[in-house]
Length: 203
Image 1 (cartoon, helix red, strand yellow):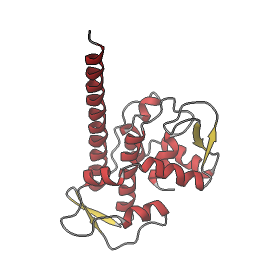
Image 2: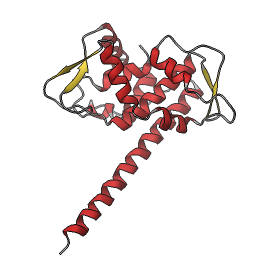
Image 3: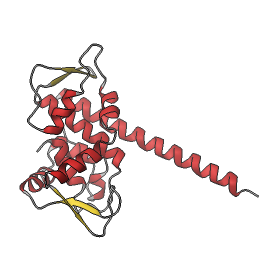
Image 4: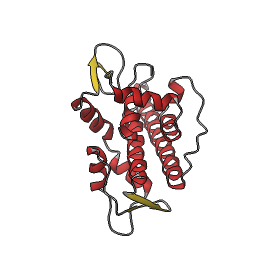
């Protein structure tokens, strides 16, 4: 599977007690896709801009979809702009795709970021591979998991992983910043909503 699918699977693993926010996960999934496209030489980075390469997209439907919506004219798209554009509702896209592939099952009870009922990985070789990557602290997956709080949910420390590639390191750093920015937006809205509610409760 792709890195994005592996990340999605471990995010929904029953071992994870705290549900990951769809927005955080969507940003991280977009980053994971970009990292796989870099590995496949479908794209390269020029600084923080995504430059389409000559290689075809990997043999994965969602990665091919990601490659098809790349900006192909200069000035090319910045990594952070890609995360916000591609990441819009991307967690829901992966949910539907993995359910269709039989990699996810719905169960009763529990918490899920996708509404009523719990969605969790089916017992498949793909799930075991994703969990093996997680348990081995594979650098890219470890940093992406940390960005969305999965290491915290498992009681682990923040990884000090070095993916060994400057372009990948750039993407991981931008994913982290984007998730932090999203959290800041959520906190600001929460404060504004609380202030608004207090105005209406005032005598």
